[in-house]
Image (cartoon, rainbow, N blue to C red; front, side, top):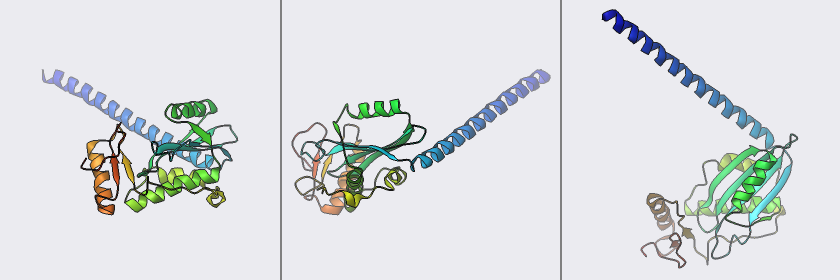
Length: 220
């Protein structure tokens, strides 16, 4: 019986060792793939500008949120797509993606964005100015941009935003308006409201709950 137990234990030990080895190998391959993709993306940041898009009517009173897209095309015909979800009434750069893809994937991504908004071509200088000024506005209220913004904004590198003659006014009717999204948790919403209250006081901003048409106060 003792010998049988020992054999079973050895088999289990070998299986466990193999599983651990496979996990280590998988993690290493994933890390290497991530590094490789990052390097390729960094190289693509040097590629010529391709297209820039902005949401139509972004600053309309019933809008306030939309995606700005800046893209570059490599010599290998791949597209580096930088997409910036902006909340121009309050939170600034709410979400960011910077991804290398082929032309068909790029067109599909644009179609997905246009399910929720109408995109129009925009001058690269104005695309950069809009994104960076939205970020700066939110920063004055106490909000940080999406964690990937620092890397994704490198897609702007040779774009001169002073070539844009447009001006942007953030907030709505002179005050920030927090438009709580349907996926915003209660905890997140309270953090936003607390940050705004700390910066502006309870009367310095508005809060609009999901699907509400009328502006509400935080205590409304």
